[in-house]
Length: 475
View (cartoon, rainbow, N blue to C red):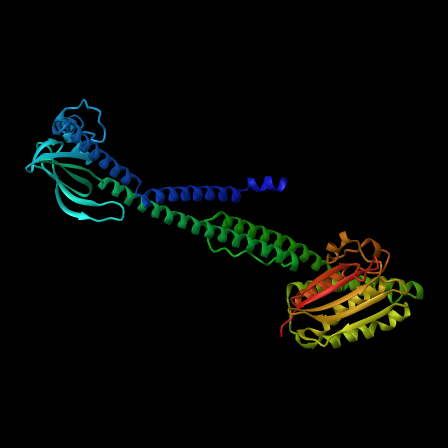
């Protein structure tokens, strides 16, 4: 429920609801106008009214004679479809009927108008045959005037009443105009709906692409640790571009802070290495053998620590690849395994390997050092009688080197910190080391455009650690 409630509050969801509502309204309007314009409902009603009025007058003539017909026409000339009398004057009624282009009733004898709301008999210019209704283009004369009006579409019936001729009709130009307007308006709505859909899709794609770009950059920074990555900004009109700009500024600040910290650490390591070397040389003059060995060993540990720091810094900042060449990875890993076999046998640890013949462009010395550091840790932190495995395989896209052990391992919550400088897991604090080995390994792997992964309990013994190197495979 919380996720659904949060989602409904998001701007994306609200915009989606708004666009969907607009599209639904547009669809309803389209259906309504299309049904209205595609059917001849109003024309059918008009035709029924003309027929009903004609039949009523014919029946009146047959029962009461022509004088009753004249009286009915004169008393119902404004709305011939109704037999109710009107209170309007004759002139006003004729003018209203003409101006509104609605119904007309004309009774003539010898081509002379004797009753009706027109001054002359309608002149038929052209007759139109339709699927359901027959219409005609006619000319009518304004009452008490010489002004003529052409009705391009009119329904009209003629009936002979003895010596008289009855004309009953109705102009339907306004109905055809309404049909044309309805169809045109429907197509306009279709165009607007299509435009709305295209714009909505384009905006959605634009927003998703921007968000995915930001996500990919952030993910790359997290995986590689490279703070030099920046979001590409190709516009400045939208909020996401402003967010990208702020995100880049944040990365600039973080990168400067991290570089300053690294610079201080590297400077300290560089400045202290020379005094430590002098101190070690001085310690060599101690006459007490045991004291001389202990003090020089501590000095060597400090020198190794500072050398490792400078080595890591050099790999991370200079990105030197002068030593890269086509390297037989299998031969490198075999050399490392052969080097540590005696140590494994001494500790009664079974060291096994499964190595596929693979070559890649790499620095053989750095690659040897990375595998050696990891295998050294695996043997160092494994108990007697346990197993350590080394594997070299390939997938369709990667070269994979995996070193797995069943040693003391680390907690799953500690895995994320293993590449940090000077970090040591709780179970390894009593052992010798400075916490820089895996940091150096990570720097070497990144120099080869690879990634380092740590696996908890890889041999399914309930404890242990697996270290996996993944390098991009280039055939």
